[in-house]
Length: 302
Image (cartoon, rainbow, N blue to C red):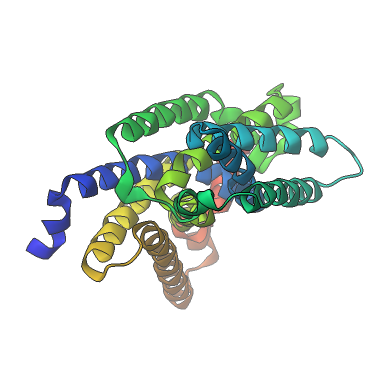
């Protein structure tokens, strides 16, 4: 039992745990919409698109966090602008900006060898180096994410399941889409210090995807995803302490491992339910017979 709590008696590990819990909550809120809307590629592009901002900020001696935020915001604005063209699909727009931003970042980095240490932390995270002021920033980011999620919940849900109804109900779908991009940007920028841009998907995608297999409402998905992300943070830090592995990567790997365990468990449950062979009337009235995604769509469109 002592081995399970020993690492968290150290101050910097305690701060790492709190940072991971806050980031897990932020990513649960944004990641739920990323999963429901199929925006995983956008999240990936946003995380890598921060590189030129970070490189330029390091070159000028400014805050890496500010540079990442400005670059991610520019990426979101670019995706929104290019997506308005009827001749370009959103995937094409995202791909072009992804490659363009990443290329600019690599060019900036190639002109100086002094970025090596900073970029290692940027790409793979430095959760054990979290300071108290970083926790304050994460707390403020979580508060902003909650405000955006609550204010835009109805519009986000309509966009995810029935975009035409969003127009009909006057929910300003374009504004809602831009707000959703802002929410994803906030989550990616807040997370890169903990797990790095290359591993941000570990907390942004895996916990909500695992929660979607079980939860039957959007708030339930977010809460479950936050709990799974928090558990992944604890397990990742514990394994990192005892085995000497990279903390950020271990946290991300733990989150992905939880998803596969959840998927295997859900698959086993479906097989057991199929063997039970309920009658059509029982199946229609049974909550287990209705896929979570279908239940969510009914909540939005009803």
